[in-house]
Amino acid sequence: MSSGAMWRSCLCLRDGWRRLLNRPSGGPTASVGKGANIPFPFRAYAPPAERKRFYQNVTITQGEGGFEINLDHRKLKTPQAKLFTVPSEALAIAVATEWDSQQDTIKFYTMHLTTLCNTSLDNPTQRNKDQLIRAAVKFLDTDTICYRVEEPETLVELQKNEWDPILEWAEKRYGVEIGSSTSIMGPSIPARTREVLVSHLASYNMWALQGIEFVVTQLKSVMLTLGLMDLRLTVEQAVLLSRLEEEYQIQKWGHVEWAHDYELRELRARTAAGTLFVHLCSESTTVKHKLLQE
Image 1 (tube, rainbow, N blue to C red):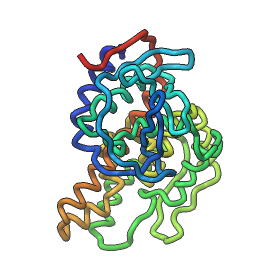
Image 2: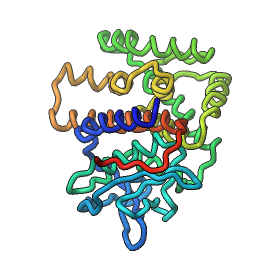
Image 3: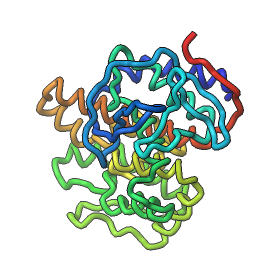
Image 4: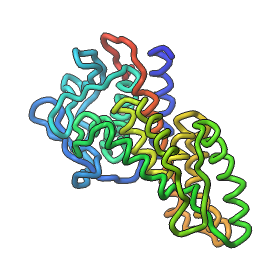
């Protein structure tokens, strides 16, 4: 995709994200140029406050280390005061779109792509590639779609009809055995299955792995995350599959409209951002300077 097309796509997504991204997630403090400390969302830090928008234009420039984000004439920095630099123009455009989408008030908790970039740049937990992979694969032991109920029959059938095709796809796609279980101990995952999935995830770079682990954590499922990365599932499909039992109970007993809708929108927003982040981490184009506001 050309840089212009990617830019237009991000701008089209902006309005949808404004509706979806509206729940606090907590975050650290980062700086923009000299004399400005700005909180960013990241779970290892205290929740940030909102702030009045202090910039007019968001621009992108290419530096020696990658693509940088500028708020007017100030360069964006990470919570650890590192220069905010991303590896691809496409990702830079997506992050710049988050900043450009802010209205009179900057809502840092809506900026999931910015958060993921900060995490990749600062690596606050100091994890290496192997540790990131192991953290993601560990979710196999409690994967949402591998745990099944024994009753009621209607839910048993629903899980079988909706989840089995994903497991069958994954087993065929990766040449492994996964299976499901109604035991509280969960399914017994063969060692070879873990080895194959570890090897597959090792093909991703560190930035992409941060995004993959983020999505796995949101969906509580390695299988659904792999389906997203391989374009077997859409974000909406993956989210609904991860909430299958909750949606079943809602259909049966009804729901508290604001609470359930709020949770669903937030999960979609986080999952969409994480998925986009993974795909954009491999994008690479060249740009001298791009102004996002016409």
